[in-house]
Length: 111
Length: 113
Image (cartoon, rainbow over all chains, first blue to last red; front, top):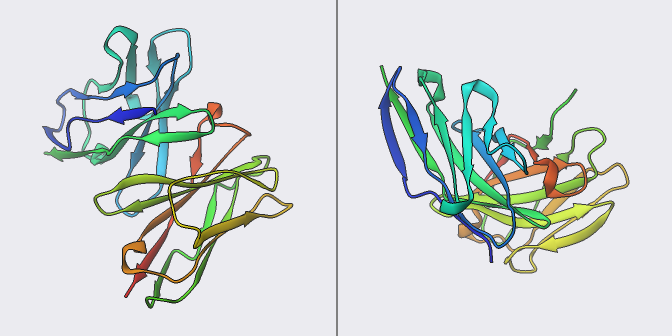
């Protein structure tokens, strides 16, 4: 079965610092990969997705992610974090007919 | 364009009761997915409906059920509520298939006391 691992449960960064959230997946074929963000008490918003082609994917809110097949990774990055980026971030892999989510990484941003 | 709408936003039920949650997908989306987000358990896949049919269900007991209507809206029913059913229930819609990514609603917060 497919699985997604987000090794960092909680990350704290200062506003203006760069950010990288890690995601590793287990999937036999070329995966469909996604990053979602969830603000407290809200649903999930799609940040970006990878299906094929260019391994560097640009998303909304200044986020990008890089697919590395050799490392089975799809890490999310942002060059300069804003206080409004504080939220929980979920990586997901598409498995035929549903998304399998990682357990999430909670991002805290200090001024 | 209206997003995915869920109702109610919050509700409190007593153990043993039954509850119905509702979801309206984005116009044009035929697939509706239900997920449970319980504290400490992450997002767990519950059900997938497409074109009025249940296409797949996650590892949940039969007291979790649902349906999809001809207008593609959906209901999730939970019978014989247990305390551990307390969670945020998220509905998402997409064009048929996961390839397009989901659009999520804001969820229904269910508390079972």
